[in-house]
Amino acid sequence: MRIRHLAIAGLVLALALSFVALTGCPKKADTNVPPPPDVPPPAPGDMPEPTDAGPATGETIRQIGSTTVLPLAEKWHTAFMEAHPEANIAVSGGGSGSGIEALISGTAEIANASRPIKDKETKQAEEAGINVVEHVVAFDGIAVIVHPSNGAGQLSVEQISDIFVGNITNWNEVGGSDAEIVIVSRDSASGTYEAFKELVVTLHKTDKERDYAASALKESSNQAVLTAVAQTETAIGYVGLGYLDDSVKALDVVAMGGGDAVAASVDNVKSGDYPVSRSLFCYTNGEPAGVLKDYMDFCMSDEGQQIVADEGFVPVK
Image (cartoon, rainbow, N blue to C red):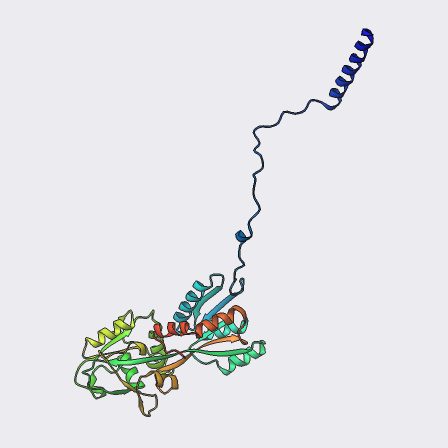
């Protein structure tokens, strides 16, 4: 019996050794590998809320054209993009003609213009399949100012041009006292400088060779021009209507070719009666939609039109 038990035990040991040989020894656990983190599922209140994306992204609005409208466009696009940082608006100058040309060629979504579109440009647009839509975004009125003691009450556009060109140098040549005229102008970087040059100095661009007199004092702002004229009895200058106050006198102006003298006022600028005024335009291809509509609506909103007033132009509203 003892021999039989030993035989059975030996058989069991042999089977165990055979199993180990077949399966191999188990590997030792790698104690350097961290266990997976125990991350609980998010609670319902922790889920992110949906957000309003605002205007569609990825659409670029290229606004090109008039250097007179450029200061407005720069302020409009800056204010709009502060509220809608996902918008992409690029603004540049180049002149009214360049802006309209860019709109026709499809390289601009907005053409800024300080003049109405010409018939030949409208025809070119039609041939290119562009449906030009006009938007009056502001009015531009510039008051011609003198010292309150100045005896002059009105001047014609031609007389004002001759003064700023330097052809008229004494107030007695236009009905005033015997005193040398001091010309005060904006500097050449100013849109008002360019507008006044177009409307008065060059006589509505009928004589492009005319330019500001070399003796003209150049000031960097409307307020600086106003202050200089207010402090100089023989001075003449020009400012946006929004800057007028009792420290100076605004002259009534007779349009080119004659007629009644017209006072510098917001109403006369809006009606087009004041000779040193004009409409400012934005042209689009068809009625605006999407981001373009959002942007144009902003330009015409109370905030957008306040920017017009702040820049020295006359709001449409």
